[in-house]
Image 1 (cartoon, rainbow, N blue to C red):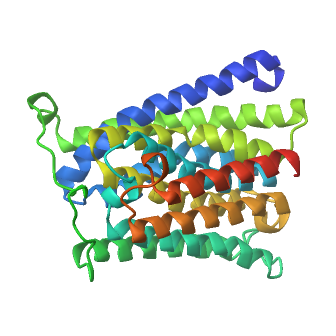
Image 2: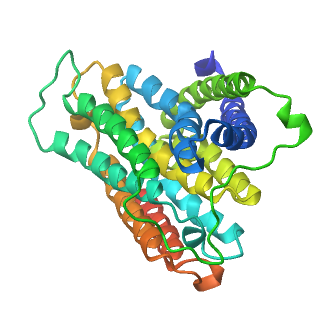
Length: 345
C-alpha cells in the first residue's frame, strides 16, 4: 500500500510516525522514573536498560525490516547512525540544563561502565569485517557475540552500582539519585499498571518504527538518495527522537542520571540492532554487505563516545556557553560527520 502512495503521502506518513514516537517517548519518561524509584534499581540502570531498550524499539523494527527486504546498508546505517545522533542529543540536553555541566551534575559510575561496554560493542562489527565471511545459518558469529557481551555488561553494571569500588566526588551541583515523593494521583497506580502502560507505549513505538522503515525505503528509491544517507541521517534521527524527548524531559524533572543513562543505555542496546538485522538478512553476512560509508558512522559514534566518557570522568563544572567542552566537541563531531555523509559519500 505504501509503495503505491504518492510522495506527499509517504512524507506525511514518515513525519506522522515521528510524531507518534515522540509522544510515546514523553510519556515513557515519567513512568520510567517511577519504576526506578519503586524497584530500587536506580535511574542509571532503568535509563540504560528499560528506557534505553524501549525507546530503541522503533529503530530495531526499522533495521530488521530493512534487512528482511535485503537492504543491508539501510539496516546497518540506521543502527549506527542512531548511536551518533543520540550522543549528540545528550549535548543538546546539556544546553537545557543551566545549573552546571550535565556530565558534572549527573556523576554516576554505572554510566561510565556502560560507555566502556558500548565502545567494545562498536568494535565487534569491525572484527567481523576483518575476518572471513563465515556464517552459521547465514548469521555471522559476531551476531551471537554482541548480545552475549551486552548481557554481561548488564551484570557488570548492576554489580558496579551495588558494590562500587569508587564514587564520584560530591559537589554542590552534583544531583543525587534519590526516590521522588509521588503525588496522591500517581500513587494510586500500581507498579504492574505502570509496566502495562509502559508496554503499551512500546507497542505504539514499534508500529511507528515499521512505518518509518517502509517509508524510508520508498524515499531511498524515489529520491535517489544513498541508503547510508537515509539510514544515518533520516530514519536513524527520526527513530532516535524518543531519546531526545526523554532526555530533555528527564533533565527538566531533575532525573539527570536517567537522562544520561537513557542515552548511553539506548546506544548500547542499539548495537543489538546489528545482530537482529544480520539474522534477518538472508544473503550472507550483513557486516560484509554493508558499505564503507556505513562503517564511517561507527568511527564517528566511537569518537563521540570517547569524548562523552572523558567528560563524565573529568566532570568539568563550567564551559563554553554554560556547557562542557565535551558537549561542544560532540556536536562538532556530529556536524562534521553529517557534512561528510552529504558531501562525500
